[in-house]
Each structure stands twice: as C-alpha cells, then as structure tokens.
Amino acid sequence: MAVFGSGASRSFGGRGPSFGFRFFCYAVLSVVLMFYDQRGGWLDTARYGLQAAIYPLQLAVNSPSAAWRWLKESFATREALQAEVDGLRNQLREQQLITMRQAALQAENATLRKLEGIQPEVIEKRLVGEVISVEVSTLRQRLLVNRGGNSGVYKSQPVVTGEGVIGQVFRTGPFSSEIILITDAEHALPVTVLRSGVRTIALGTGRSTSLELPYVPQNYDVKVGDVLVTSGLGQVFPYGLPVGRVTKVTRDPAEPLAQIQAVPIAQIESDREVLFIWSRPGHPSAPASPQELAVEAKTP
Amino acid sequence: MNFARREPRWAVTFTLLLGLVLSVLPLPDWLSAVRPSFIALVIVYWSIYAPHAGGIFGAFAAGLALDVFKGEVLGQNALAAITVAYVAMTLHQRLRNQTLIQQSLFSFAMLWVYEVIVWGIEGWIGHKTSTPWRWLQPMIGGMLWPFIAMLMSRTHSRS
Image 1: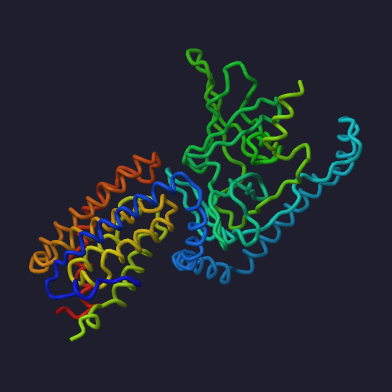
Image 2 (image 1 turned 90 degrees about the vertical axis):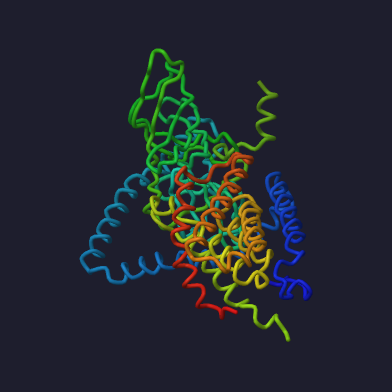
C-alpha cells in the first residue's frame, strides 16, 4: 500500500480525473504481466519471489485444518496408537521379506544383463516434504508442500510416496512448491505395463481414484490387474516407479483403440508426507536426457 | 486540514487480506464451487465508501496476490479487480446514497463483470479453472452484500 491518490485528487470532488488514468496504467500493466507470464522467462523469477511473499498467508489459511489434525493426533487413544504401531510393524515385516533377496537379485540381474558390476540404486537422493494443503477438484489436483528451491527442489522433479508416483513439481518458491498430481486433468505420464512391456501414456482424469490410458491399440496385451510403472521416457521420471493398476479394459470392435482405466497406487488424499527424488545421472533406469536420446537415434 | 488522516488505510489493508483469505480458504468442493469472490466484494465496498484509501493500486495488489495464491496467470484477477474498482469508484457518489438493496444489485453486476473478465482471460489462455457453477457466484455475492456492507461499515467512521 505505497501508492495512494495524489494530494489534488484527494479533494472533496471525489470523482478525480486520475481514476481513469491510473486504471488505464494498471490495466496495461496487467495485460503485459499476463502476456509475459504466458510466455515464461523473466517473470518466473518474479513469481518465485512472490511465492515466498504469499507463503505465510498460505500457511495461515491452512492452519485450521493443521490445528485440527494436530488436535486429533494428540487426543488419539492409546488403543488407536497401538493399532497403528502394530500395522506399521506388520508392514515393515512384509517389506523386509520383499527386500531380503534384493542383493542376490541385483547380482543375478547384473549377470543376466552382462553388466560389469551391480548398479547402485537409481534414486540417488531423496527429501521428505510435508503436505500443507491438498486441492482435489475435477479441474485441479494439486498439493502444496513445505519444501522449495532452498532445499534444492526444482521444476518438474518427480514426487513419490512410499507406494508409488504421485506427481511432479509444477512450480517452486523458495520455501514451498506446488505439485501437480498424476490424476490432474492436465497431467500425462509415460508408463509401461510391467507384465507385457507395452508402453503408453497415462492421463489424469480429474478424479483422484482414476487414470486413463486412451492410446493403446486394440490388439496390445493389457489385462485387468496389470501393474503400470513409469517407462523412463519423457525425461522426468526414472524407469520402474509404480504408478497404478489396470481396473478396466473395454475393447469395442468399432474403435481402433482400447479404452483402459487404471487406479493410482499411491493414495493421494490420505498421505501427509511426500518424497522428492533425484535420479542418479547416467544410470540405465534414469530418465533419458535429450542428448542421450539423440545418440540412441543415431546408432541403430 | 489533512484528509489523508481520515482514510481508513489499516481497515482497507486488513479487510483486503481477510477477503483474500476467504477467497482461498480450503472448502469442500460443492461449497467452493459457489463461493462468491469475497475479494471483489471488499474492493467494491471500499471503492464506494473510501475510494482514495486503497485506490486502484489496492485493488491491483489484491488481485495480483490472488493470482499468485491460486497459481493462475499473473494479472488475471488483477485486471478484473481494477475494472470493478474503477467502475465502482466512478459511480461512488451516487452509490453511497442508495439503499442496501440497490447496492446489492450493483455488487451483483460487478461480481458478474469480474467473473466474465476472469472467464474471458481463461478462455484466451486455454486454462479452465472453474465450473459452470461460477455463474451462480455473483448472485450469492449480491445476496451477501447487505451483511458484508454492515460488517465493514464498523471498521471505519463514515463521513
């Protein structure tokens, strides 16, 4: 609130001639802002700063629900907590069973692929972020998370939970970032069917419990129950992160493409924590960079 | 006599912030679909009763803050906000002397203009952010006007 009417226009006349002029100036400014914001570029820096300015307000707006959660947690009964601990213990046991043979399997895989040695894990680094707000409407499926550029989070970074992919970073501020979920109607994710290796694209539908695979030809091998993982194409996600499970395959003989629906594996609405991940560059499962793709295209 | 002292600037800043919070407060889907633009209502109010306190700049700043908050293209809500503010400011002397019902109708029209501008820009950019329920929002806003006007008139001394 720095600029106010000049002394002259503050006279009792009220209908100051400066209203029209100032309106015109700000209208031009708005249109210029819109124009440059659409084209990207230097306004991104301004937006980055503005995100920081607005962050306290975002926290304030979401504080009632945060307070409610905190209250619920602090008044949780001993039984409820015990049940949660038991559940987590069971989960840990199952996970341990799965990972027990991991080292042996990795060695086996390396031999089969005739690799020199065992590859390290493709996820090099991870960062836990806490969800501040969840927006799940038909038009926008977004999360606001309390990690931003200051923690090294970058635009279009993959974001996962313990179960699988939930989305990617859409916009960052210094202290926060906005995440577009894979179920957002504007999101498309390159996936592959784990069982048959069919590669396609999973589109968000605007509903948090469903994904669409509209580009699969009729005769391709996709069945109900198939697990979808990221395909490593698209330069964002590394290969092999769980995405969803196919729930419905409709093959209409009149249509050239099958209609396939899937349900995302990561539970988006209930999770309060997400993981930002960094892939190891040069790893075979890492998302291919444009240069690598160009080299592959040249060498048949 | 210094007129600047009589401008309720703190009240303007505070209510604009409050309007911003109300505009972005997370609500259930069905409720937020019909939520009127509180920020536009606050802007209309101040444009009528204290056109020089926040001025066009106040409306612009509030609109821009809303843009950043909602993650929409910068300037979208700002342009709608300054248009509404400008129209209300030009007519403020006439509007001050009208009844609350007449003002309600005016604010309904202003909210409608606001929605049309935002809708037009969304169409131009090709990024939809709202449902057809948005055309119900101005009506609800107009109905809320008497209450909002009464509440807000307590924040400053009417001359």
